[in-house]
Length: 135
Picture 1: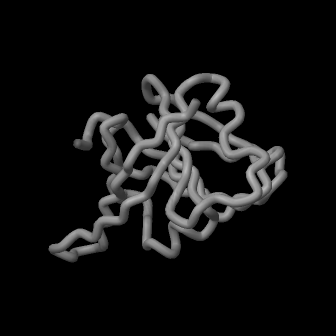
Picture 2: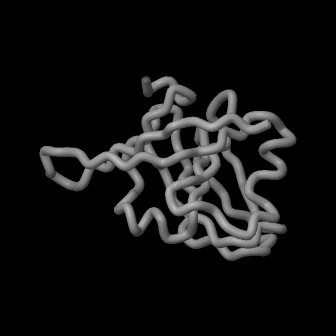
């Protein structure tokens, strides 16, 4: 069974002194079976929900959308919690690899377009107990 976690994204916009925070309810995938299944076969995903793929250490990873029926945004997150790359609005059912490019510690999958809707950008911080930087 997947565990649910509360994840907070700290969105830092330019030179703004105040940071905006958005909360998401996230399923945690840590076992090989959970990671292999991911969000495949799901017809929908709540607007502020997603799945966090957590790796034991930083590594370069690649995903595909085979058997995934909904477009997703994939946030590739470093061990320090910073978003290093975002693959926006991935194509459902595609077998084209979607790479982290650089080594990362986690991947957060959310509904396609959510990154744009919430203003999430590379460099923003993800706070999570699972990443070691949350409460």
